[in-house]
Length: 545
Ligand code: ADP
Image (cartoon, rainbow, N blue to C red; front, side):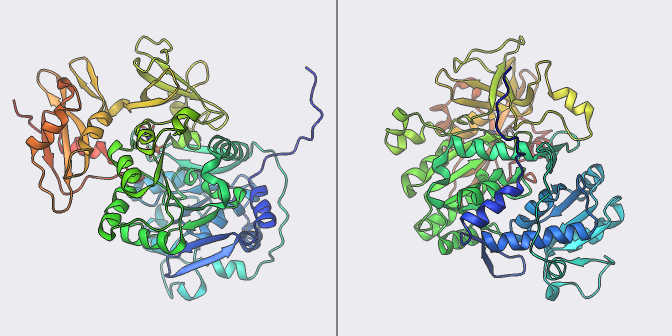
């Protein structure tokens, strides 16, 4: 081999904020704060405060490799922590505050976090959890001196703004191996104990580049982007790195994520794009309907994390002239795997025809290899028909879980590919179709019924606001599908009406054996419908014979 003669400089995330401070100093980060009101500053000012925070972290004794935990919403202080922690060579461990308290304890102890930074909202939670947190020595409340509690159980609680006030903004980032870890995120543990995904500076930078390279239009012209997806959910899908790098304005919505609040923030700040899970968009669409229009500049929705129903894509496209980009991925994949990606001839189609392609999970992001392994263990052809377990490979994909050799061994195959636990097929023109999570498939008499397909059909029924399909035990077929639906406000769809519509859209053997109406569906900590909870609720459900 003849080695190239180029400089070998490490890819470090700290370089991103320096770039933004120089090239886009006045482009804004706007945050809806937990204390109330809006906070705004440019990337140059953010860099100054990140410098102060880095000095404070060093003064607190945080060392390279240390895990520093956060329990926080999307806000500018959380953004600052991302960069300051990674910049000094430590690891930003974002913990999902919506998890059960016991899971938070498990995660913090497993990660051996040494410090915890948290928003005011979580003060009561942290006070309660403190006796169970074994390795955390430093507790910092992410607020100003005015909002510090007068007394409390957390002795020695530090104030974020107090720490910064004493520090110098100048901080030169140390240089180290690009393979050094920079962030840690645990999967929500929908199956078993949460597992830690430890990202490196290199993988994070590559994921950022790959996503920008694959869909540059999403970030063109210094767009204004609002991540509803939390900073604690898989790096907010890379937006905290992509927006500074591309000079996009970042709107951070804080703790209030209901339809009316989000709508107002989007309207007032001129958000052009919103990123989040489908349930968030259902709430926002309700608000559009109430007000008779969309927030004035909103033109793009990126929806990922669970399948986006065709009906939702059509409503956004037809009624509001909003283009929906559908993404599929996993925490283990940094997280993006595939996303809506049109070939020129598809892009040329009218919007509604294009929208008909967007319920598919997309085409692969550059840097992510896909393979489908059929029931017999063979590689399935990309024929759009043969389904099997989806495996992925790439430099932005986990090679093993943090301190969990057993779980790692289960999910990495002999060729080094990661098994996603999703069942998928790939069309000849390379669209990925996720059939279902393996554990959510309804196994009916040797056939698999995709709950996603049935849900998609049911979401198109008038008067259905949201729904989920689960398998319930059946004496003859092992399992049969049950449709659990939430009625839209003021609507009274009947079981027969829904089944009639479904009959025109799906095959007879896929038809739900019954429909039940509920007021609300249970949600997971990442805002997805919790099928595990639904299955538990309907475990003894007797289907009509
Ligand atoms: P959690 O388990 O906490 O939800 P992830 O966000 O990592 O964590 O979930 C990844 C899983 O979510 C995928 O394996 C897949 O089952 C599901 N998923 C993500 N995006 C989509 C999508 N667009 N369509 C269908 N399923 C999806």
